[in-house]
Length: 151
Image 1 (cartoon, helix red, strand yellow):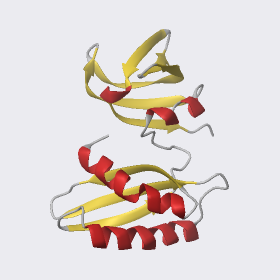
Image 2 (tube, one colour):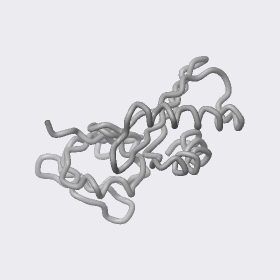
Image 3 (cartoon, one colour):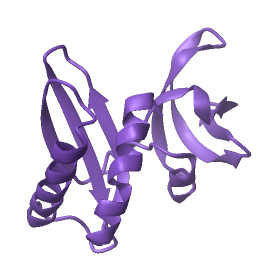
């Protein structure tokens, strides 16, 4: 997880949990003067628009006081959705058997993008089967991972 994302996760985790939600992940997209902070929340019963509004209000207050982001930014609070991003290694086991799109920070065997079936976790590595080949990819090397929903 990138530095700013981790800083914001550490800052907001307790507040979101106190509201009864899980902080699924944080995306901070620095876009010059107008950045985007997207916070994903989850709960066993699912997420409603009202849940997002409540978390947005509470998180917005914390961010105003702590001020971890310089300049203007837009705050979005969302559910992870069906095509959810995976942020932490402990999120992967729940999606074994699902199709996942992975993008690595640097090329592995000449490629950065992998799309295949998530077959498991081995230590700190994510195991993905692409066609008939299994790859063990270090979680620390994964820039972005997204579950492909079955429709």
